[in-house]
Length: 227
Image 1 (cartoon, helix red, strand yellow):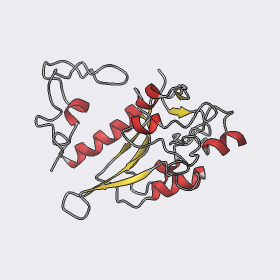
Image 2: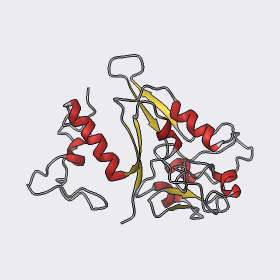
Image 3: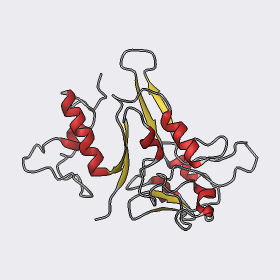
């Protein structure tokens, strides 16, 4: 089975240094006004402050793919969501559909020409020949073809931002939280790693559906974020 390449940001380790943002900008030489990755801080300056690095999450069921009228957005064999700028018409539907704000125009202006959409490529380039000059000019460096991880994850000094096979990085995160000693209180922990209420083994691994989730059940009883 092909790998499903994903990002995970450990908010307990993210220190809002923006090293991932700088690394992405430098590695891919994105145009002015385009930031494929950004760091968002929640509860800034008060107890419980957390920062999280956000970019395209390369969704398995990507909403941007569903709304694109030209089918320019596609999945690679590794589950990475890429797009073809030759097919893109700059309609902006994907930017409205994406909950992470990943697709964006390289230029701004109400009535000005805004060009083709740009987004995080997981440092995997585009539909052009791997590591070719044409691919780099349109999409940036193809580190995946070179056997490397995305530049943002490689640059993260605290290893808060993890990239790679979804199952592997999920195991790394699970081990971290178990070491901290407060796994069950984390939002989403029960569905991701908890034992099913009806007994048996966890069936929410890999590409399988989450059969262990009881209909109508919230993720952690109250369904809220940790305090």
